Length: 615
View 1: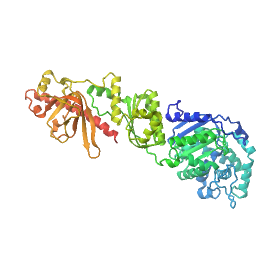
View 2 (view 1 turned 90 degrees about the vertical axis):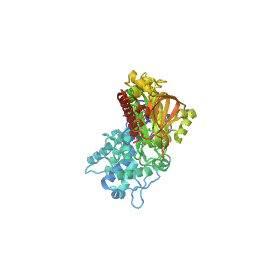
View 3 (view 1 turned 90 degrees about the horizontal axis):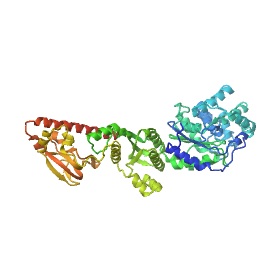
View 4 (view 1 turned 60 degrees about the horizontal axis):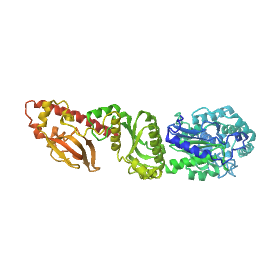
């Protein structure tokens, strides 16, 4: 899949990387194989494939070129699968040579090549391709590459002919291997097959998927087909780590930290086990035969996304804990019936993504993909980082780029629970200054962000989020359906109370003797536990009631109710409720209790949604 330009922060980064190095003019196109010298030095493609099959690609990612020496690890894997480790080790070693790709590095006693990544070792490995005939061995080789790439591949016959006609050094190596009985029979036949394997045509996308197949333990992430057994995949990656970049291997693994292999046509594959594969193509080579732009791209990718093998965890925990909408999960601000009905109808436009664990590129990339896939269906988005224990600078970059992208798409985007994330703070300040950080982390909790989104959604649909400043008794939620006489009967038993801000109206553990109808202001309901201390669990505004649950069971208070702002309320003692005149009283009590049941049911639904979000 190719994304539209800049649709993903990851592809946006790759576009940046491509633009950064496209202007690089160092290096020369290989000419010792004449046909390779025809390549355009401006060709430049980058592709990344994840272990679940997602491919990001930019530039000349679909231009075909020949695989060359990048074929070597795959054929080595085929030899291991076919003959087993002992048989293969008898013919090809595993020690780094520290020499160029075409060096004649043989054990002076046995004639065994030092490793399968240099030409001598690769020719010996190609001699192990199974098959009773030349055609069967060719078919087996093409099936191997097709399985790794996830599509049928072909040989570039022009490059093959050029390699065959000019490969005198490789021909000498093959005959030397025959001299030591590393190759049996006529050395020209495995040599010809070697020329063919190097001439298989691939593109950047193919390379990324081939690398991702190694990253996923030998299973092609696009087709689901197992190509290589896990134990042989590990052996292959070990060889790539120590020998894949020839006499640049030490510096590569130190700076880039991913098993890799290069080819003289300008390709590089790199593998981060368990996470992703990288394919880069750019024909100009450095003095060691590696793509100049490819080296620079892989180094930046590793540094910017934290992809160094020894700096990343072996097991990647999924970062997405759950996804909810404001239709199913609401803030702690209790809403009136009209507002609740509106949020149920339109709350799907507010999406909440709760992240968890340690955020790195591999864990965050699927989340970004999912968010962008759903972006068109919403108007507000909350990224809840409250359960994130750590994140690296690569994740910080992706989060900020994602937020910028969503805002450009018209999605109001908020980060919540980021206050304690020191790495994120340092990164944001470096990019946007202190003001940028203060703006980004203004929501300490998901609930704070959700309340703002609810308010904005209510205003969008013509409902004042602030609600009325004062609600008369007849419009109180517990007084729905009361007639004038019933309201008068109730009003006669109420006492108006003025409540300053920060006043405990009800204290947890105290006897229950009254309930309240809130006419103006705002109160909060607080619970205290040993583990978390005091926490706000609900906020109530005008038209709502509190302390009413004890009307049913008359048990001591289970929570503290404190005014958040100066408030005015009507107080109904339970004694006054119980002492109402008998005539007509039953109907009034029944209406109060029935309305109370509806209110509690709505609050219970909100509480259930909140509990589900914590799982």
